Length: 68
Image 1 (cartoon, rainbow, N blue to C red):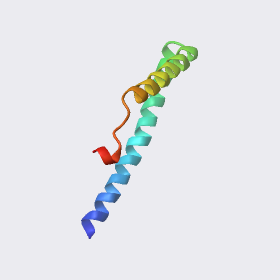
Image 2: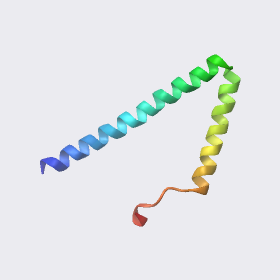
Image 3: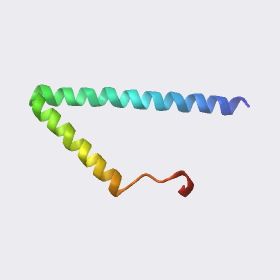
Image 4: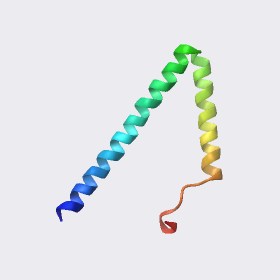
């Protein structure tokens, strides 16, 4: 089945580009904040963002596969 194989390959490429594109965008954003404000402020903002992300994950967890 050729279509199934292509869909898997395209899905893997999409995940790869999304993951590394997200890291590149995040690195650029924190670099801009560090350059314009300060490194300390950028690290503090990153820590707050991580904390808020953890709270959001606890408050609104992702749906499990069996519930979709």
